[in-house]
Image 1 (cartoon, rainbow, N blue to C red):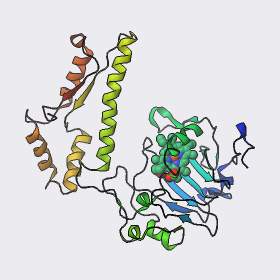
Image 2: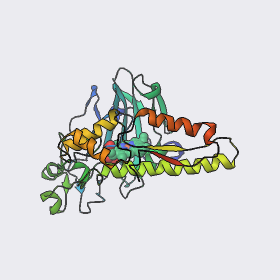
Image 3: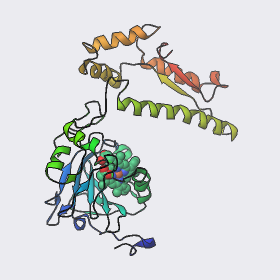
Image 4: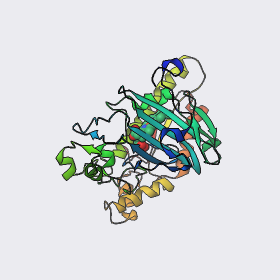
Length: 324
Ligand code: HEC
C-alpha cells in the first residue's frame, strides 16, 4: 500500500508473522514454502549468526539473463535473521507491485516468540552477548545506503553468492548446505541463467592468499586506515585540537590471528606445514625473526610520547623490515 505510511511511504505489517516469514501459529518456525539459502561471502556483523529465506509469488521466477542484474518479480520477499545467542532481528526486503523495493527490520522479543517492526530510524537493543552489551538495528536510510548502490538492491541472492563452487578462502564462509544455483534452476525459480554458469558454477578466483578476495578487502581496509590517519592528523592539527594522529603497521606476530595465518597457508597447500610458512616469513624479514607484542607496544608508546611530539600523520612499519 504505497503512500499510506509516514511521509507518504509504504505501510509495513507491525509483526514479522504478518510478512509471511514465520508460521503465525509458531512464530519461532519459518513459514512453509520459504526457500532457505546461504551465501558464499556473507556480510560480517559483529559475529551474529544468520539465516536467510526468499519467497516468490506462486508461478513466478527470477530472470537471470543478465548475471549481474537478476530481475526479481513483483511480490518477491527476502528475509535475513540475525542471532547473537538468541534471535535479535529479522531484516526484510520486498518488491512491491509497482517495482519499488522497500526495507524494514523486525526486532525479536527476549522470549523469541515474535518480532515487531523496528523504527524506520533504527534502534538499539540490549543484548548481553553483543559487544558493549548493545546491538544496533539499522534504520531504513542505512539499509538503502548499502543496498541501493548496486544495479539490483538484492545483494546476496546472485549467481556468485549461490554457486555450488564455494570459495574456501571466503571469510566466515558457510558450508553449501542450502539450495544452490543449479537446484534453483532445476526447480524453475531461476530462469534464463546463461548455460556456462550452469555447466561451470562461478567462483571468486583464488590463486594464492595474496590474490584472494579476502586479501583485497583486507588491503582496501588497511589503505583506508592509512588515509584516515593522514586526514585526521590534518584536521586535528589545523583545528588546534592538540592531538597527533599516527598508526603502526605491524609485521607478523604469532598471536592467535598471526599463528592461524600460518595454519591457513599450510592447509591451502602453499607450504608443507605451518612451520614452513613461518620460516618463509622469517626468511623475508631483514631482522630475521617474527614480531613480538612488545615490539608493537613500544612503537605505540613512542608515537604517543613527547619524544614524537613533531610526528603526526604517519604510518610506521614495525615489521623488522619485511615490508621494504
Ligand atoms: C552495511 C551494509 C548493509 C546494511 C546497513 C544493511 N544491509 Fe542488508 N545486506 C547487506 C549485504 C552485503 C547483504 C548480502 C550478504 C549477506 O546476506 O550476508 C545483505 C543481505 C540482506 C538481505 C538478504 C537479501 C539480499 O539482499 O541479499 C536482506 C533481506 C537484507 N539485507 C535486508 C536489510 C535491511 C532491511 C536493512 C536495514 C534495516 C539492511 N539490510 C541493512 C548489506 C547491508
